Length: 423
Image: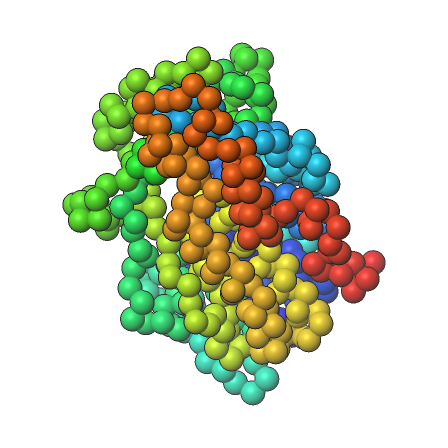
């Protein structure tokens, strides 16, 4: 009952590792001819870290990134709005990690190659089509660059973990069109700089129309500097003629640095951090509408292919990891069958749709926009603008929505039952 997985990103590789852990044969097919450590920093929330820990990967995570200790929101003037401990510092049984996305993917790839065999992870195989046969599914692949056929593979299920431009999703919804741009552009980079605040703080400053996010993804080295990931964001009018046709490209600091030139706070020099970046990459902030269904027969979606969302609340990679674990649990319970896909979708589709829609409303970051609206010239005390109870409730409700409220996570049983796993 081999499961075929299209896509060797974070979700696809976590699914492969989870199925192997459960004793289910799996093969992974990746469009790219070579898997390289691309991207910039991401955060893994405690509910996702728990799943990677249960896959035996916690030590590897510690070698890749940094255990996040604090999340803090600031105004555009650098005034503190709200801060809270994160991960173990907040009482979770599992840490939160800030890591380089490419390094995380390569760690998962190495683990998958070792556990399921490198011969079961094929690169340069782009999903083109599939057909259902009695008790199985046959997927057809091609070399995307040349268009030449690669061959076919037969399995019990086909999972499209092939990202926001998913071929499987396009087959299910041929008229959907491109991802939806909300008018915001993100410029992302990594720089070596002196640590700020706790040295393990993730910060967000500004408001809905201009924001700066940064967090370290390494401890400080002998030079006293850490590797710090940053995101500079500007939001334009919906009809603004930006370069929408490009989904990522080298960025030009001239397009955004002037707007951040006076963001020099006593705890962080934003323009200096931007200037220290070796390279900057430009991304439009895009997502996709929630779908009425993910599954057709023996094929289904996972991760960004199923629920691409705005990078608000640090949820994209974490939700893909949860998808992989819930799907594995259902395959363990019901076999590699359409019934397993139906049960997986019934749990994960409504849960992730709520996050997609909440992120469109700015998620927990809406508190920064409220401060900008109520006190654009600054404030003497945040309590005069927003009550602590309101800030606490905003943070609490989003954690609950996204599935990582502390008490619920600490007390719930494993998603993949350990009693069902091979010794």
